[in-house]
Length: 83
Image 1: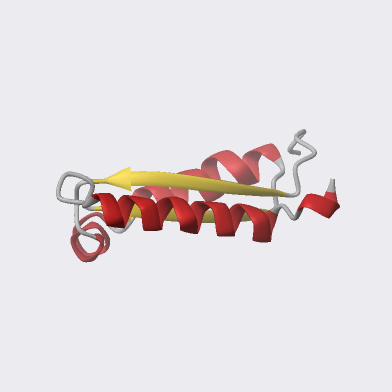
Image 2: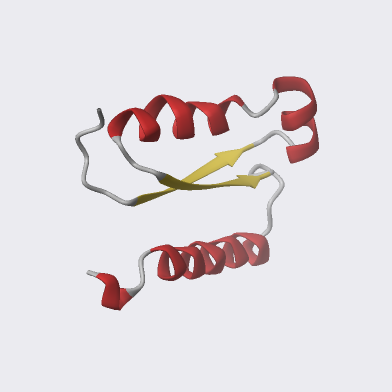
């Protein structure tokens, strides 16, 4: 029985592996780790995870776009009036 009272979690990861290769070669082990081995174990029923890549070749514009996406997802999952 998980003991955390959180109803949702956001997990943001960065990677230097292109997403297609990550899925094809590794099967996205971080998805399973965060959802099944950490959040579910702790009692968090809803988990949203987003991988940003490829970091090493990313541009300032891409990184700004990723930060905008983080802000949007955070507002959607944790609306200000839900506290």
